[in-house]
Amino acid sequence: MSTTAVKKVGILTGGGDCPGLNAVIRAVVTRAEQLEVEVLGIRGGWRGFLLGDTEPLTRVRTRGILHEGGTILGTSRQNPFLEKGGPERVEAAFRAWKLDGLIAVGGEGTLSLASKFHERGLRVVGVPKTIDNDLSGTEVTFGFDTAVEVATSLIDRLRTTAEAHERVMVVELMGRHAGWIALHAGLAGGADVVVVPERPTTIEDIIKVVLLRRAEGKLFSLVVMAEGALIQERDAKEAHLVLQNQVPDAFGRPRLGGIGAHVAHCIEDATGIESRVTVLGHVQRGGTPTARDRVLALRFGVRAMEALHQGRSGVMVALQADHIVELPLDEATRRKTVDDAWLALADVFCEGPGR
Ligand code: F6P
Image (cartoon, rainbow, N blue to C red; front, side, top):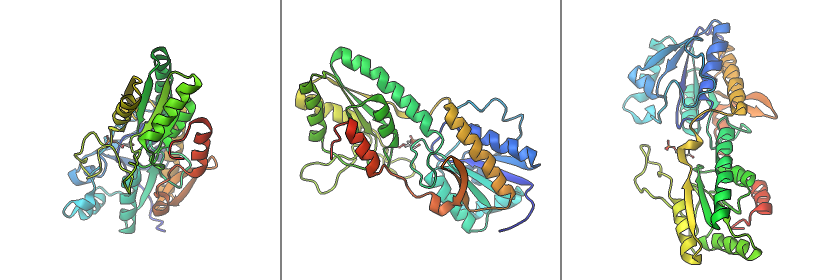
């Protein structure tokens, strides 16, 4: 581990935005000034390295951003390893800007790139971020609490109108590979059905639950679907995503969305019960972070700055047993999905389709 004095560090935010990013930036800058370290903001994620798009960050610049959603640095999913000479350009900019280290705030994609640059010799510390809460190593990521709060309050609102009209309300929530938001909001909101990517289900199983509830005398139903939920057709070998838009996103990933409308349509078609869909979408990641997310983000930011200042690299800050710890970046970014214990809990309250 290098003991070179740390005088100037860069910070970037990459991937989908997430409530709490500004709190991390503010924490890094505040702690850096106390340690007499200069901070350079790299705008638009890794793209900022390629375009030379930077902004010096001071406490004055980061005043008043703690409670704001989004990120003052902007973000992108640009991957320099997919650009001609990309990694070398990043390294050249790193040297030209006289950076002694970099704090990369992001999810799986951003942090795996951070890990690659660490292996190539840059001093990099990662801060985990995603509303999906699907990074192993940390018990929770900031942004998740906000997303669950927003989703739960949506389900609460849908409950009263569902009951008044005796409808089935299908709610589509974010969650690409992991159903943490759907699971937590579904449990907190008292959903009848929760479907997560970790456990494929059939449309028939969902309909069975709706009809069972009706037979019990409950005349409305709340069905919560993670957008990455997989549907198993009777004769098919593999379960599949339901996508409204078949065009992949800029990075070749399926553009999620559509499962909610599909399920609502199938329920109404099979049962004649009026079924509506609400897609919460990006409302889950916009706007002001909860107090819990702000505090977690502040703790992560301070620790990341201190880790860099003390010469560490290739680590990610994480929450474990309410303590902030550091873990090797490559170990920490493995995917954390909903496990059997959580599914069993959901089954106590929701007739878990796919059981
Ligand atoms: O932040 C993660 C996530 O919320 C996923 O659940 C979702 O699939 C994705 O972002 C959508 O992001 P975008 O619309 O920016 O591609």
